[in-house]
Picture 1 (cartoon, rainbow, N blue to C red):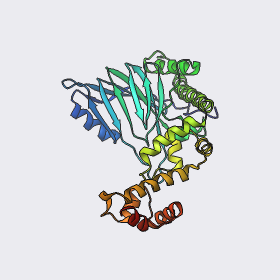
Picture 2: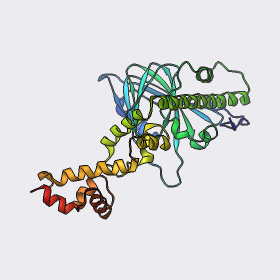
Picture 3: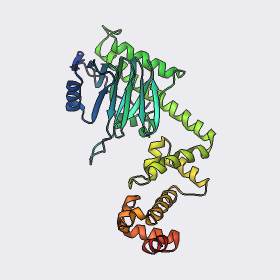
Picture 4: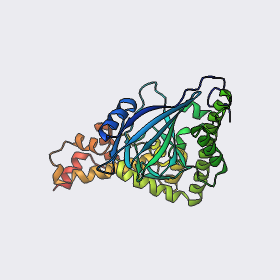
Length: 328
């Protein structure tokens, strides 16, 4: 650990206070969207709903403790603005249980579990029972103090068998449940800092273990996962090698190695999938009225001229010539 994640010299500790309280789902959505933006809540019971969001600040660390009845929380993707740093949250399950879903990944959270969320990605949290979950904002700069690749930690849960994970959670419970009342401010600040450091460290260990497990499974499994994702996302012009690596939670080099083992580069594979789809659309009567440029954009190409060059290189003829042959 290179340096503390927070200053330990702050002497002021704010008391806990309610940020938002609501018994109506409409009121709750209004309160949440006003304060936190791209979040929407759907209740799972038609007749009752209640929620309470409490904030406890210890030094530089803010703990947002939310208790709610069964619901589904949807977080929309939030692209970074120019000059804006990536934002992360540690989500810790205190009571009840929930299921976190993001980009095909599913993480079940039980009391004592925590995970790091990347606020640039869309995700959902499903609560099947009354639940309490704590969110702790964590900047990318702070994460870089422990790991050089914080994005790789997103949506990875430290397993209960990890002793560091258990110690970190004990610190969190102590801070939230006032078991450390009477300690000097400096000591409380350090406890909060230690929770963050240990939580990130335990998730880093799990991420490392996951990478090793992935290697043992071989590159075929990773290739298949990427191929399945490309099949869904290849029409999006923003589907790039970097994007796929982030979605899979592995390094770009790992994905490149997996595709190389199958005789491909990732870029060529995506390009060929787009071109095959374009050739299919050019032969379809349903697309007879579409311009070639419209078909190019529909399969994920940003440039009409780039598409035409790639198409001719792949099939030995221009898109217009292929359309004429295929439709007759």
